[in-house]
Picture: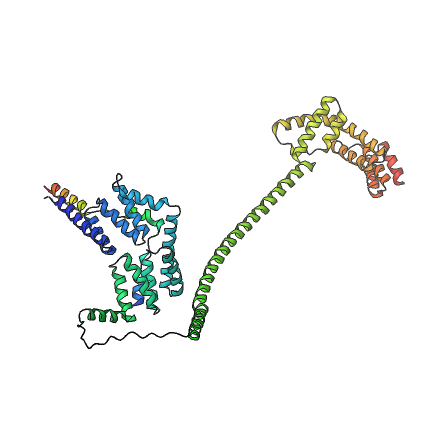
Length: 47
Length: 434
């Protein structure tokens, strides 16, 4: 059974084109490689 | 193999799986894997570009632009994203249309979440007409149709979604529900059962041809008539009210916008009117002050002009003009040190010369019947010297000539009382009738 009220609340507004530049600036681009590099730097410092 | 290499391999694996799913049109599944690939390696340009392409295909232009712009920034040269961005931006107005579609969708969602389903449906129908690959709009439209029991239309919308993204989780779930409501699930189940449970035909089995019933001409006409009536009823009771509400809403919004603009303009006009009135008043005040300065004989400017006239008269040797100008000027307005020194020098000269000139001027005015001027000169004379009985007597005679007996008698009385020994005392007594 599908609950209409619950389903409708799950829909979120789409990102507007004017907000693209803000979204790009706020994007978190940290990847696994960055995290690994940080860990390796920390290990080197401890040594 | 070091850790960094392992990370690169993991990213590649996720990308490969994402690419495979994208080729099978499982777009939402592919997007999940591509996002995971980028979490391992943000520089994986192909993964990022493909993710953007998937967003674009599903109608999410803004999300696509984000991925392609980031991609270009991370790898400026030899990047396919450059072409994608160029394609989106090159066609005139395409970006603007995409922007409008997103705004309309957000508005439709607002309607739907605020119990204005009919408006939401109208808006969404327009959106999917203009942008048939907008998955989210199809899904919302399907949900609204389902809520209103229109499962056939809901099924059509969901079918379009599944054509774009064949494993869309939400569309699949909705479709199952729609099928259960329309009985299609049962039909499909039976078909599946029949597919695996057929038996060989026996010799004595009889195949019955499907019956064919031909409609008569009258029946066709009646059926067409019923169809037309139903169509008209649909238009009157379903389409027109919804359309009317939309038009009313749009009209009200437009009117509101115009009213706001008008109010602002009126406020601005009132403000400007007040400013104009203020400036007008300031102008009138300034003009009044200027006229006062020009016209007021007692003004400071005119007193300095009189001083200049006196000096000019002295230069020309015209003592009469100098004296007559001097006695009419207001000396208190001359305040600067240089001019006060000049004025004092003039005053010393006036004490010596002015009485004779004033006496002559008064006698002349009296002789031509200008009694007021004569009296004024005599009064000025008195300011220099008030001990001359002739002047007082003459003033009495001028008053008498004017018919002002009271003042005349007062003047004659002064002569009789204060200058009893003078020849004018006798004359004054004669005038008083003593």
